[in-house]
Picture (cartoon, rainbow, N blue to C red):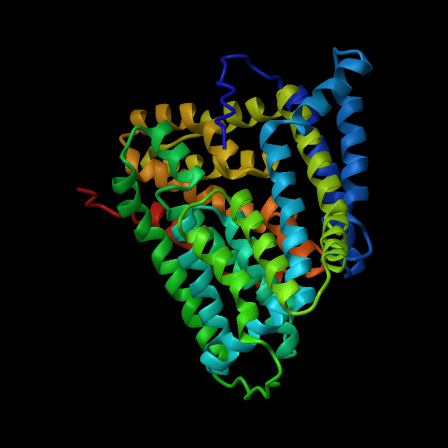
Length: 437
C-alpha cells in the first residue's frame, strides 16, 4: 500500500471547526450503531444508508468551498489508488468464493478439515490458522479472503454461529497484521518511529502473543464439550486443490490479486473436471461479483466521507487536542495509543492512521524518553484493535459480505482485539517490556 503521507502541519484548528469536521463520524455512529442498539437488531439499519446520510452531512458542513469542489474532494478520496485496489480484491474474492462454493471446493475443504481435526479443536485450529497465515502473508485482508468462506461453511456444518466463526478468523487475521515483517502497518510504524523491524517485532511480541494465547485458551475452553460431527462421504477430496493453491501462494507472499486469480483459474479447472460447463462457472463468478456490490458502495462512501473529514481539519484537530494533554511517560504512551486509535476510527485504515500520526508520535516519544520500538509497537497494536472492532473496516466488511451477515454481527465475539487492548493498557501501566535490547 502506498504511503499517503499528508504530513502534519502546524495549522491550528479551532474547537468549533474541529468538532464540526468530525461530526460526520458521529452522525454515522448514531445512525448505524446507536439506532441498531436501540432496536436490538443490526440488520434494521443498512450501513450504506447510514453512510449516505453521513456523507451528505460531510459535504454540507465542509465550509469555504463551492459545492462542486466539495464533491470533488469526496470523489478524489473515494477514488484513491488504495480504495480502487481494495475494490479489485473484493471483486476477485467474490468471484473465487462463489465459484469455489458452487463446484464443491468449500464443502470438500470443510469435510477434510473436520475429519482431520477433532470437534473440540475446530475453533482453536481456525484461530491458529488465521494467526499463522496472517503472520506469513502480512495482510489481514488476504487471510480473510482465504479463510472466511471456510469458516462460514464450518459454522453451518456444525450448526454454529456464523458471526462467531467469522470473528475467530478476523481476530487471528489481525494478529499477523500486527506482527508480520511484511505487513503495511509494521513497515509504516517502524519507518515513522525510526527502528528496525526485528526490534519492533520483539517488543510487539510482549503485547500481541499473550493476547493471542489467552484468546486461544478461551476458544479451547469454549469448545471442550463440542459434540461429534457426522460427515457425508460423498465429497471429492481433489476439490480441495483451489483452496490449497490459494493458501500456498498467499503464504509464499504473492500479491493477493494474483493469489485470487490463480484461485479462480484452478477452481474453473477443477469445476470442468467435475462436469461443470464454462458458462455455468462464469455465471457463478458473475453472481459472486454482483454480491460484492453493497460492499463496494459502502467502501466508496466511507472513503469519500473520511476524505472530507481530513480535508476539513478533523484529523489535525484530534492530533493537536490529544498531544497537548500529556503528563509523564505513561501518559505519553497512552496518548500515542489513543491518537492512532481515534485517527483510525476516522480513516478506517490502520496503515493510513499510523502514517498520519507517525511524525507527531515520534516527537512525543523522543520528548518523553519512550523507546522507538515501544512507540512503534503501540501505534501498530492500537490501530489493529480499532480496525478489527469498527464495522466499516475493509476486513470486517469483506468477511461479513462473504458470510452474508451484518457488519456488526461479529462484534460480540471479537475476543482477540479486546485481549490485545488489555495488553496495551498493561504494557503502559507497568512500562513493559523493560529490556528491549
